[in-house]
Amino acid sequence: MNLPTKLTIMRIIMTFIIIFILLFPFYAVGVEFPQYTVSGIVIKSEYIVAGILFIIASITDFIDGYLARKNNQVTDLGKMLDAIADKILVNTILIILACQGFIYPIIPVITVLRDTFVDAIKMQSAGKGKVVAAIKTGKIKTASLMIGIVLVLFYNLPFEIMNLNVGTFFLIIGAVMSIISGIEYYNLHKKLIFGEKEEILS
Image (cartoon, rainbow, N blue to C red; front, side, top):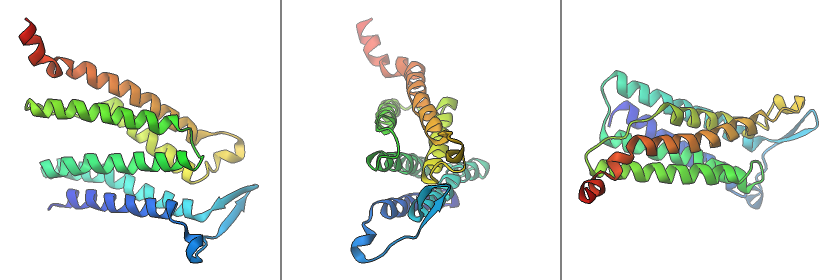
């Protein structure tokens, strides 16, 4: 197991730690995170902790890919784990934030549907021996969602003081790019997906 794969596994573990921090009822066991007030905004420190961990996990997403390409350590296991890690890191946190009323529910709905659709394309392509490479719009989508999640976990500070909902803006951009990248994936690979059917019909 090489270093990029270890970083990917660490990202998966950190994701479950973030989920635990955001969902576990600490009050039930007599544990309370401190709260702070900034310009009239009540800040629960568990979200700040989750935000810091999310930043670290997001950074490993870029580092492991860079190291794998630089050191020629790209493996099938690493690619599979990286795809899983990305999905659970972003989508699970989006779902949690939507359930807790921090973001619009339509955002995780769009991203989960898009990822399911794209994964289906990748599986279909893999079955025909073709690899579906990442595209620029997909990378923009992921980066936008990550930035938006961090800002939401940090209560959109300091922009909230200026009444600028920058966190939601980035999440909306990420949702829009999810749709665009999903359509682009389909257009790029529809011939491959329907290739066998088209040959039969012809």
